[in-house]
Amino acid sequence: MAGRAGRQVLMMMDELHASPSPSSSSPSSRSSSREPVNAFLALAAEEDDLSSSSSSSSSSSSSSSPSPSATPRAPVVSDAKREEDIDEILAELGVELTERAGASPREPSPFDIDRRALDPSVELKRIFGADVAREVEQQQGGGVAEAELAGASRRVRRLAARGRIVRQALRPGILVKPRSSWPAFSTPGLVLRATGVTAGEGKRMYEMVASDWYEEAEEMYEEAQSTYDPRNVMGVLQLHPWHGGSLLAMADLHRSTGDGAYADELVERFIYAMERGWPPAGTLFGSNVFVPFAGYNKLLFVGMMRHVQVLGRRGLHRTALECLKLLYSMNEEDPVGVLACIDFYALRASAHAWLRSMSRSVTQASTMPNIVYSLALASVLERRQGDVGVEEEGITDDEMVKALMMHPAALVRMQEKLGDLDVRLVEWGEVLATPFFAESTGRLANNPTLRKLIDIFVERSHVLWKSPHVQGCMLRAAERVVSLVNASEEMQRESLPMGLSILEWQSVGAGAFPEGAEDAYVHLKVSDFSDAVAAINPEELQAMQGGEDDAEELMMAMAAEMAAGAAGGGRAAPDDLGDAGPLAAFLRTLLPWVHAGVAPTSGDEDDSDDQGA
Image (cartoon, rainbow, N blue to C red; front, side):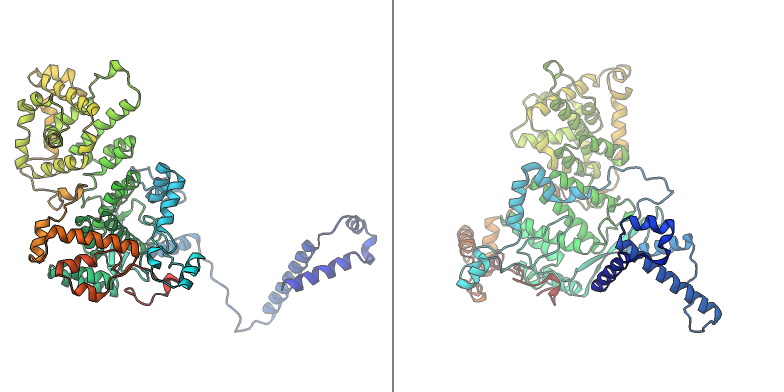
């Protein structure tokens, strides 16, 4: 086609440069002959003439002799009908238009998602630099590890050194970048699909729908759970390496045995498996989404909270904050306690302005004990970062005073926690002995919701309150409150923030969490918000082993075997596992090289015939 067009151009150029035509005597032809001729434009003009002539001839022939087999003319579709059809298509795909032509733009919300901030590598690069982030990606990226080449032939080693042996490339996600050692991924086990619209606000509802292989794996997992034998759960994970429940269960077990790094990797695998079943990118990053806390959706919420903890342990608090914002925007009923810990990550990420904006936009957040105390701490930290002079160090913060008056029991619980860690100041004894603070904890017995929130706040955020500077600010605010407890109501109104008395501030906190009400967070566990790991007790290991081996010697032997396996890259044979006791065999199956976790050496990720392959 290109050759024919080139020949036509050359022929036209020859004709144009030949002898003038009979009409060249006209002024227009003489002027045009002096100007350079663009052959490509001439060719385009000739094609336009041919197309117009053919269209005119066809129209005239059709008008003169109509044929019954002629193509009927397409009906004219109005703009309103076309827009309605587009809306139906977008509704089927679950895609939400954030802004329409002629409609007023939506006001920004504190829970608007920054998609770039969801990527852990972005914050890793911001904190440690591009070189460190690149090194981490290389360690988790492609290539074949030396340990895996142990015992391989020279030819295989040479091919690996030249880069001819590559791993299966998994498609990158938004929340997690897949590692090269992960197994092949063919089809998502759980797919998040639009199922309808909520009755009140008209939000689009989404539900996790299980595929055939995932339902089969779920039945196996439930049966393995009923046996109370972790080895059976490990067997499910070997057959179906992308089963969500098995990934989270084995992550908990690895963390309890001291292998926190591999536990974090299992959580990342879970998040990657869930993300592969999400609708098109950006669909969930809006305010018109509702994911109910039911069915398989519960697994998504629980796994996302585990992912937030993993990010927090790695120091990626900005990414963790963005993930919490995504969780809350999915379900504002807050079934997993996002508001109970989001203040911690906001303070860690120095998002003080965002924390204030969020407390104003969410009504219930403005009275939660963790939020009001974190707002006070944010003002203290901002004043500290602003190079406050020595003469201003004695200034007490009104935000801190408000927090102490609304929830005095939180101060007592915090100081008890810090006292156990030997970081509490001595001056607190006299202040905590006053009736205002000493009697506050007794009222928590009949208020389970407030007690749960305070316990979560103390367990999650006590590390932020142990510095001498923060303790000093809190102590001055507490002394100010104690000095005004017995003062007249008029004096309290003149001295306290917003012109309210101490009793009125207490009423604000008590009104938000009335005594005698049911525990609104009964499904939450304080341990789920803690970085402390509940390690397996050696006595329990010995009891599980049935007295065959000493527990400490068994763990030392397993540590030695793990080090030898990491150095040699060998894989334990099934016969080797059968000679040990039940616990020893189970622990050996948890070793990183004795599980289905190595991807094929070549091919595309879509070439997998079976999910468990």
